Image 1: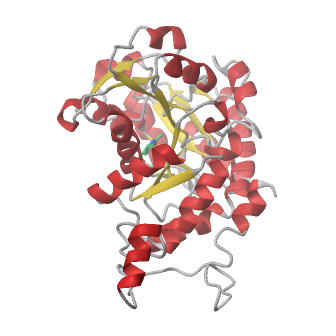
Image 2: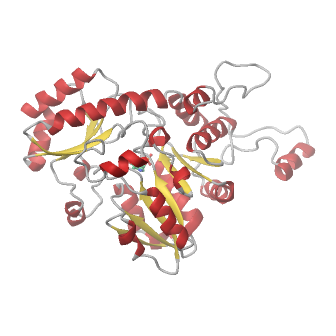
Image 3: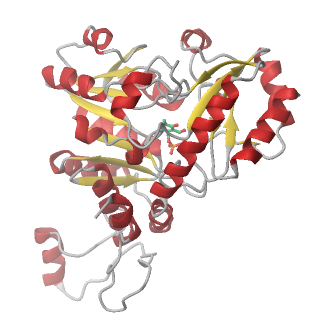
Amino acid sequence: MEPTTRLLHAGDGADPGAHPAVAPIYQTAVFAFPNLDAIAAYYERGEGYLYSRNANPSVRDLERAAADLEGCEDAVATGSGMAALTIGILTVARGGGHVIGCGDLYGGTHALLAQAESFGFTASVVPSADPDAVAAAFTPDTRLVLTELITNPRMRVNDIASLADLAHGHRARLLVDATFATPYHCRPAALGADLVMQSATKFYGGHNDVTAGLVCGRRSLMQPARELAVLLGTTLAPFEAWLCLRGMKTLGLRMRHQSAQALAVAESLAREPRVESVDYPGLPGHPDHALARRQLQNGFGPMLAFTLAGGAAGADRFLRGLKLIRFEPSLGGVTTTVSHAATTSHRLVPPEERARRGIGDGLIRLSVGCEDLDDILTDLRQALAN
Ligand SMILES: Cc1ncc(COP(=O)(O)O)c(C=O)c1O
């Protein structure tokens, strides 16, 4: 079966007695045992469930569906994308390992790496994810290379197969944050990534009603990742897992539609005189367009950014002028939203670093949703005229 079909049926048959049409929510913190034999079976053979910080059937439904979708052996679900990232990093690098974070990185990731030493690892941040630039950052202790598939917010596309080769050549692992692309456009594990991480708060959940994260990979990495997640208590709750799984049923449909709309919006914005530049990998003038065509399938994703003349004042006038599209500092929902990276997601990135990365005060990030295209374009145009 194709991934969308499999997702639509994920969790089917979870309760063999009652045959529910939709997988139930196991809203329970603990599970009852009839006797000591059952406890022994749990600990010795992994049969059943004990306590929902360790594992819960609704959360396992989500983990299995995500692993299947990403083409990985297993997945660990967490209470947020940052928790998934932290579990991924610590699984490989805790105890003094060195991590290379490369390319544009989400502001929260940047802030985490800046505090690496207080968490028991060291980190270097390399501005470019070009493998030649990254090669110089390896040390004898490097255990992990961390990158984003499509970067937040400048929409650079990183070459996952080359970075995987580079990392493996140094006996290190590659962790890819694939939040902006989702497996609908690219499955980094098939390109050599050892760990794939998603902020499921975004497109996986898809409705801005859940905060969740997923880290996926081989069983040999997911086993220690799960032990760490149980120890640190980064667990996802059953209702949140169920909401994610419900959202994921339409992931393929949403991504197909939103990506097609994003391309049309990017083309339209590129013709607007008040827009200085548009960052979208689907545009032929984008610096990574050729790589994006090779590495991404089914389009280029629903995210784009554009820079307005007039810096912060211009951005503020534009945001005030929007009537339909709201300024919501997140992304990935079914409605079109905008954000202002310099004052929200990348606020913790030092201003000189923001300037070097082209995250100016006039940069607007757009998450293109499912509204009729004409309504999106009309609202953007009238706000630009503001
Ligand atoms: C690319 C990327 N990775 C990770 C995260 C963190 O995810 P969460 O907010 O679910 O912790 C975000 C959040 O905006 C993000 O944009």
